[in-house]
Amino acid sequence: MRRRPRLLGLSWLPAVVTAVGVLVLWTVVAASDWIQPAYLAPSPLEVWDAFVRANTYHPVGGGVDRVVRGEENYFLWEHLVVSLRRIAIGLVLAILVGVPLGLLMGTVESVRRVAGPYLDFLRSIPPLAYMGFLVAWFGIYDTSKIWLLFLAAFPPIALATINGVRGVREDQVNAVLSLGASRRQAVTSVVLPATTPDILSGIRVAVGFAWTTVVAAELVNGLPGIGGLAYLSGTQNKIALSVACILVIGLTAIALDFVIRLIERTLAPWRGKA
Image 1 (cartoon, rainbow, N blue to C red):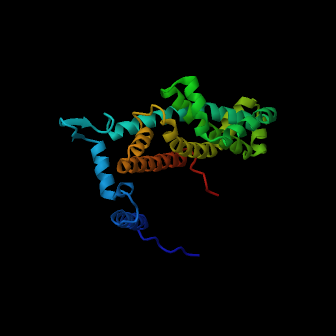
Image 2: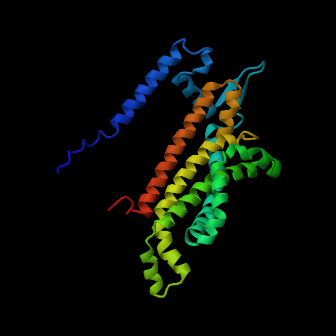
Image 3: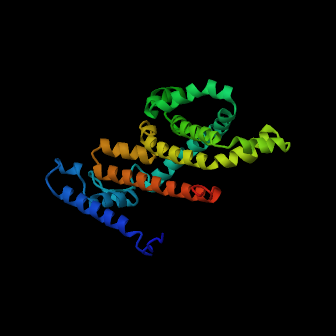
């Protein structure tokens, strides 16, 4: 059966049309009197102005005019970099713990029986529930935030690794063992490469969980930080700035997901192929 030729150069058209439609609808809603008070529904232009203001030096009033730097003395991109650093540390720790534990639980039945219920327990708890005692244990600085992001990212990575190990064909492992390889060599040369696509899928999910948790992680002493700025600006009725922060978080998450998918295509090009 012949496939219809794709229209080269027009693959971007649906996304652009959708984006324009959303902007038009957003502008209409903001310009109407449907939502009161009006500052609760900032227009796209107001959000853009807030974004530009957060990335530049700008004057403020209050008796004596002065110039301030971005928002809370940091540019918006600096808030983003700090949050990315926290997420990266929590994610790396989750990978360092989750992948070996997942391989161990996937290959050793007794370990899976013992550790499985605890992993399911951690997976079922909303990350925000940890925040109180993490602050009590580790204080209000970055340590508690990194622990929270680790707890959000660790379960999906470990579970994806376990599922990947279960999908490895037993005859492939037995073939390597019959050739004289040790159990460790079988894991590193057969199980781990075969599990790589599932591990990367788990990392994609973990990054999403980390981004949804970053605002909770930065509720306490979260500045600088994009999540902390989004929360603080909302409490101060700076809704345009809060929306700008949310858009930056969402667009950054999409960019990170795209990078992870590129890495997956590079490390596991056979993924999805017969």
